[in-house]
Amino acid sequence: MKLAHIADPHLGIRQYHRQTASGINQREADVAHAFRQAVDGVLAARPDAILVAGDLFHSVRPTNAAIVFAFRQFQRLREALPEVPIVLIAGNHDTPRSTETGSILRLFEELGVDVAADEARRLVYPALDLAVLAVPHQALVSGARPLLRPDGNERHQVMVLHGEVEGIFPADRSSAEYGGALVGLEELALTEWSYVALGHYHVQHEVAPRVWYAGSLEYVSPNLWGELVDEAGRRSAGKGWLLVDLERGTAEPHPVSLARKILDLEPIEAAGLPAPAVNGLIADRVAAVAGGIGDKIVRLRVWNIPRHVGRELDHAAIRALKSAALHFHLDLRRPDIHRTVGMGAPGRRQTLPELVRAYLERRPLPAELDREAFVHLGAALIDGVERDLAAG
Image 1 (tube, helix red, strand yellow):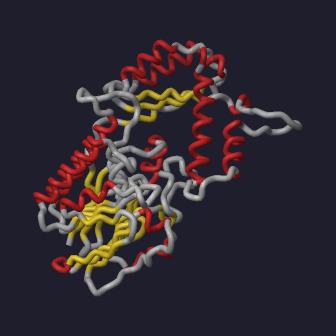
Image 2: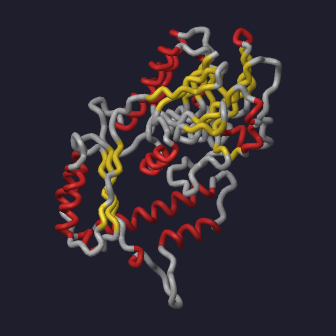
Image 3: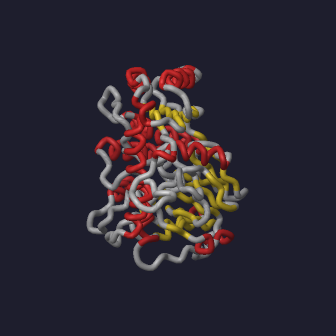
């Protein structure tokens, strides 16, 4: 008995400003490319069942192009594997805030896909002696949670769930996807399942034997660079999907080939350096990239660069780099001593991002708003403004 485990395609995401010749956002096209490859791989593997563990779309109301593309890919699966069950659950990104809004995922029921959009569903496939507990994001955040334990006499007991398993996300959350429902390890009854297919964490990772995050198919986290670091730390196989063998208890990574490289270049230490020297180091870092930075996504951090030096950099050359890459982020970091605001007695003063974070943490918010995600976004925006000012 083999299962295909796919998670977090995030179809329809839009990043940066470049478009394809047909007018589609380039990153939206890149993400579609990854999903098409995953479908190609599943068709070649011919599994007994297919599980899609949430966040098929990046937003509740995806673009028409994203909807049509997704429908065609599921249609390919259904036509080539007509007897294979396909289970699709909603993640936090494709879950409406209001239950009256309705979910676009219901569309795929027209193709015979079993969809769990708001409530948990127990799906039984007698021919396979298989039961699947499908637990979408909404089932974990509204009302009483479903019991996350097997039920019935089927030989193969599988759960597919979209949430944040306690203790798995990185401590600094720099690469974490916000807005997920926290699930305790004790809730999952890990040893009772034949397999648990998880979605929401974008790094492919084994939580426990027979319990896996498949990871996202492309780099779609708020912090791509933190995701790269997290992947390296976990020795992840990279982006792709999992082919699970229930008899053997194995999950085999099947990578997808990404449309472009994402590079985090070696940082520059600019303390004490004049602008011409920093310009030269920037040029050296870029020149060292094999094949150049054309159409790649690139970040270059410059540490301890005073505001006046940032203003004196060769901004014409920087604009040329930004034009060459799909996205070139020159991240200028001012010395910490210059990042203080406010008045008061002598001693360490809070930085502006710290002040904003403290304010947002105590500000009254609507009950349905995720405070942690709200605070993180506010602090990140202020921090970004400060860096832009430093860049001049």
